[in-house]
Length: 463
Image (cartoon, rainbow, N blue to C red; front, side):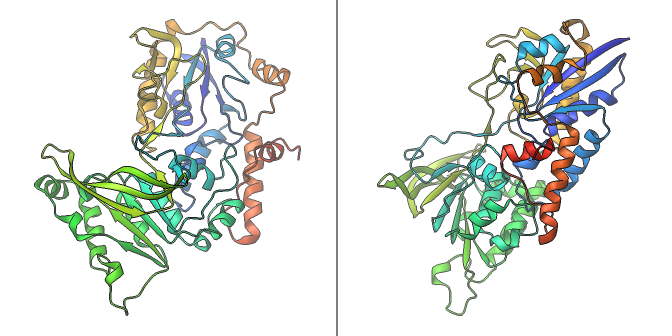
């Protein structure tokens, strides 16, 4: 019987789902799969891209854990593609490779002042508060007023973490250094900006509801943003998700002092922190003082009658000392692999990788997840993505590579010879148990280990 030795680069949901789907598919060949990741721990953005106060993510982690714990997929963590192992190495030892490396960089926001001190990408901030080992341990939270540009789930995650009282994060798996950083935060006001209206936002109702449930945080919205055009009214009437979002926002409008906070009655209950939502607001400039952000300038927009927006020419300015752009993620190029710089993806046809500026296929090379289709859709979308890619992989048997040494022992020997301190599934179990044990005395789900060397030491039982 034909044997397929498959390498998957990326141990997040996209890579794990692809492995699971292939192993469960009807096929006329045996499969062995090795999963590589540059991080010592698996799960990708589920571990390092989702806010720690999202308990529902545990369900996704449990599903991914069940796949890995079957024992029919090998994991090689702490292995950097392009450095520790190359595409030529994979060709020597496998029949094919699937790249599932995701998208972790921030998309650009091209406005004056965006490179000033105090201007950050949301993805970097998310990596900090999620304890990503390749990011700084400290984050400057010395601003009182902060802007978040974007109205997707990541933007609301960032806004919520900035506005939330840090003691309310203690039951989560937030790392110790992040907890300390948030406790020292000076933030009192968070302003979220979206260039379209409330009926065109990208976040989910659940994300929005969570904002309104924050302790000692007032939600501020503005009546002028709710003068709906016909397209917005139609969206609310026809789309249940939009209808729920509108219902939540309308309920906030009824709260005392929500529209004119500064002019509210003296006896209006005041929270110590505020989260302001600004719709129909397109950022056009970050003003600076001595090289630092001091204000955000935005233009009021309005519907253009064709489903988009147009500027009104009216400019407004709000003093802020930090800005976080959450306008999307962007993929990163991989050594030796074609890359579309404009869209931040590996060029492909339904997961079959194509040569740069050509429709010609690259034999044996596939893609799935965000590096395949761009950073759109929720985690669940990666399953259908992976099914499409796997379908082509199965049918492309005639174009697989012919490896010189497909033996299972070859990769550990190669990594050992190169001095790579890789981690495996048993190592992840050790790290997982270690983090849970760190959190137990404090009544916490876990305390993440942030330092890469410490993660590897625990995983390899060398610490």
